Image (cartoon, rainbow, N blue to C red; front, side):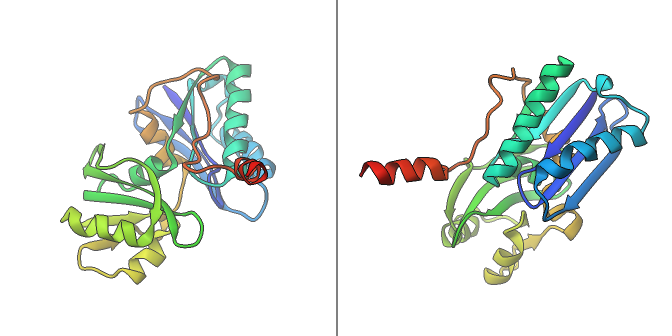
Length: 228
């Protein structure tokens, strides 16, 4: 099976092509870009497929990061995948951005904690138990304060590998001999993690593919404020 993975949840725009039969990534492109993801993701996919001699019709499944993350970035990624799956009549899978981050570092034995910046002192986070091959959720995905996360990890009692764009600051500010940080090439979102994580997710219909923000979007907040 040939899986196309896409992640547009943060400042990186990333696509990857994974052959499940040979367990080989045929290609992976990740850009840390200031451009809108809508400007780069589709040309990136087109060039990637061309470079490995594949066509869109060769793709069996498309996996996409569906949140949490950038409101605009997530909508661009999910909308693009819906359009491609509709045109190609292929299957799709929505993958948590946090789970994709953790799967980038699945070789670590212990607890993997994905930490993404939300706003102020808040972070999106989820922790997983890793046996080196697969992940098991230790907690639910949530948006909490960094102090709350530090307390949770302290009581966890195991070595913890931090990943995500909030990992660097957290590692520096809450120093502990039990805290480790993922290397730069595995710290931020990329589509490889989305591809691997999708293998443990069910295929869904286009109607079921939706964005998970873990918090209310600005339009919802504005409406609540207006109705007060």
